[in-house]
Amino acid sequence: MPLEVLALTAFSLAVLSAAADPSAPPSEPSGTVSFDEAAKQAGDAASWVEQNWSTWLNTGLRIALILIVAIVLRIMVRRALTKLIARMNRSAQAVEGTALGGLLVNAERRRQRSEAIGSVLRSVASFLILGTAGLMILGAFKINLAPLLASAGVAGVAIGFGARNLVTDFLSGVFMIMEDQYGVGDAVDAGVATGEVIEVGLRVTKLRGDDGEIWYVRNGEIKRIGNMSQGWATSSVDVAVRPSEDLDQVRSVIDGVGEELAKAEPWNEQLWGPVEVLGLTEVLLDSMTVRVAVKTMPGKALGIERELRWRIKRAFDAAGIRIVGGLPLAEEAAVADRSASVAPPSALASPMSPQSLAAAPIPPPTNLSK
Picture 1 (cartoon, rainbow, N blue to C red):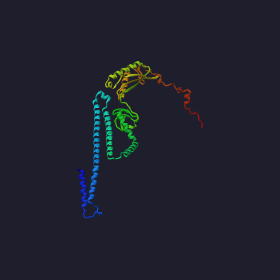
Picture 2 (cartoon, rainbow, N blue to C red):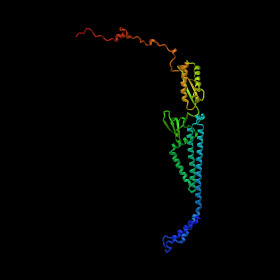
Picture 3 (cartoon, one colour):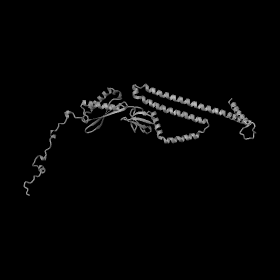
Picture 4 (cartoon, rainbow, N blue to C red):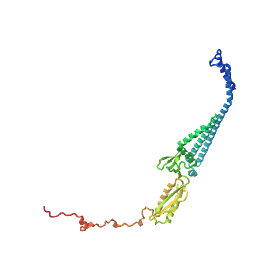
């Protein structure tokens, strides 16, 4: 039906054009066409439409099908990724507040990590789906894609060389997040800066230093990373005592301190092993050093070291064990030498000594004549 209507419309226009000046001879260049010429043009137009109508319909349906499939696929993939991220966050919230959650799971760290991974996956999926759909649409229009792909490759290489630092930071951030090298709340040593992680991004990682400063570290600049909040930590304390002390007594006192610390709150939850006396690390003429170590919860090593020093010092004072640098005991204090405050005899004390005579002024002569 549309073909007949289009042909009839073209024929009517040709007839009207021919009837505009019926008295003009056919040979005059008046710009009008005859009835036969109008009919011929209408027939050519109808035949051209009839020949290309199926191609147009096929191309249009193909493009519509590509767009529908791409949009539906993109929505499904993004929804699946969103559900996956939500499930990861729910699993982290389920153990939050429990002993396992406090030791192994950081909710904020897990949330940021999952959100970053989800954002990357959604962006990659959208780029691949829409990019493929765009190329298929251009192919449906019979456009040669070889020059376009070659130009895109050259442009990609140029952008890669120009923004290689940005690409390096982005790729390093993606791998750090996927491998879970560190997260929010971890104490890390990134080489260029040390501190607590407060935010993990695809390009920059934020660290808060010991003095409160915030370090913005590019992920591409991190060549090695030391995470001090994963697994377990070790508290190590060196105690220097006099070489005359009884080592068995020193070990016994330190073991007692370790047992008391393991029973006290909140240290009993932060200690992951017994307090051990590893032995002597240094023996000198005036001192010997005993090393004490214990396995602790990550991030709690410094606090336990301070508490160990505090308790060991009090226990040593109670047991009479002398630490190098402390005051000596009263019964072994050296008796003061009373002669130390007496000045040595002076040669000038005797007026007849050569030193006194040399130091005395010369008296003036008694008789002076003018």
